[in-house]
Image 1 (cartoon, rainbow, N blue to C red):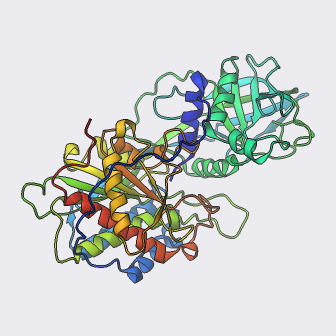
Image 2 (image 1 turned 90 degrees about the horizontal axis):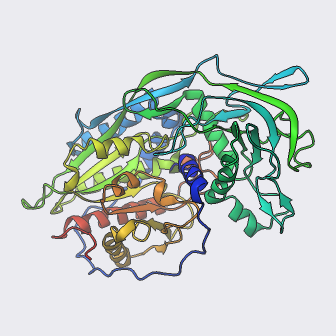
Image 3 (image 1 turned 120 degrees about the horizontal axis):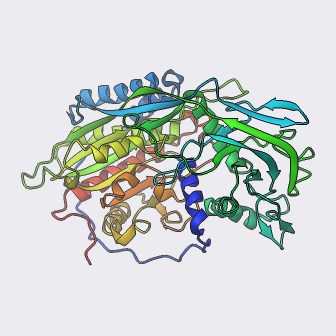
Length: 527
């Protein structure tokens, strides 16, 4: 599951008009759906699921970073399993769909220099500072150079309650540094509100309106993990979809993340004790030079053919992402982010579903389309390529069920996203079908709908591969067991997976897909 690109897109969107953070709405009425006839299917093979995930999330796959040989080995692993099950290939090269990616890398001439009283300090790329080359879909590009005096804008906020008026400085033409977290005197509720993406957007927006030369966000609080993920991207180079083309003009000021480190030349000498807004008497000169290389990457696509001649050419799509974030910079003994939950759990859960259905005595009426997407962590690149270059007609996909991080947290709790968050009620009927399937299970899940809102600060609806389908009007449901302390860390290991829960979520996904596949009509809202 990706976070940072969504966060930055929301932040820049907030520059125009940042939305107020509203309380979560109360429970909404869900559309009703008749309980489906339980399909006759083989059980999820929990032992095979455990064995597959133990291999898929092992060090042998080096964190499955998209565009690397390790991600290709992950795709081959899935294809080998599908071959043994007897599913039909549905890519453009057998089970594989080639996804053309290019990798932008920072050339050695890239420099970040802070000068003070004639002395220059060079900031280390990926260790002290990480620039953002893109800020999200549809957002103007930031510049690749910056030059200006450094001013520290505290937390870039005005709050009489917290005794802050941080933007009273002259910011025009300056390199503006601010801390992206919350002040130490903020209570827990205020801290949670200030760390939401919308609030970061408000602060960036207020600075951009003042004409800065560059913005540097000190990655404190929740942003510290994002800095680590970005640093890993710098190590390997950022991925872009499609052939390299001439870029549009870069018009926004350079935007960078900085490590929250006492003694940094970007911060006051006595920070964090001194967090008052102030000119630092230092100058930043930054220049980025980029190189580019092609990076081979692959979606894995398979079908289970339906039994009804009238419906077999339509599909219920099931998706997960096979990539993770690769090898990380770390001071500990383990540097490989194995992504056992993100999204080893979803990828191997779908493989378990495919295995059970291939062994079942009856086939669904519609066909099932399994897609393991690449490049989700780099910006949902594989799913975006699939919906723009589908290997089956896109309008033949009646629904998409996405599994991302489905193996952790409380045994009976499950989050569903889409039925309420999708616009115009396009996923409402599909959500009702999933609810009825869940209610019919021997041990139903307690559904947490907290994230299923277009206004939730975490914006989970925008953060995984289902969104590529939803943007094209396809009903979606996103299954997840939620975030945890090991998210995007090397500690996301197989030993922490609840395999009983993973098997049960996989069964719910399987039975949900069958319920939709056996319906005569599409699960779409009627007006």
